[in-house]
Length: 142
Image (cartoon, rainbow, N blue to C red; front, top):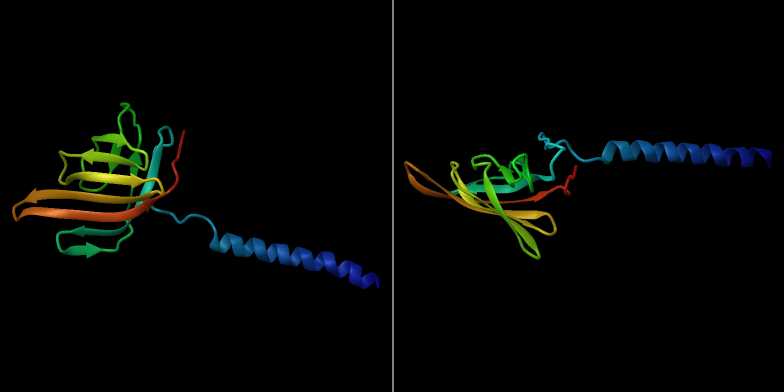
């Protein structure tokens, strides 16, 4: 009878260690390759799909969206767009409008942290429409 009472704590310790190892191997956010400035409120966002004209990719590139940056203005650090942007809040979304970069357009961040981007770029071949979807991590605040 004494052996049974000492085995239960040993089995419990083994189960807890195994669960901790499984949690370490599967848990935790993946490294997105970008880091925002922790002094300013921001989201780190990742593309699910991106189309430029008829060419679409499923590359999971990431970028940073600041609600406010050093100059007190919002900032969009999405490839091809100007970092200078305007921001307008609505009940169910935040819209960022950017112009002056290679690509001008509107980035819409929904309440569920999904996003849509619609833009265009004017080049030698005429206007190329850009479309993207993806998601953002929770808001990082200072």
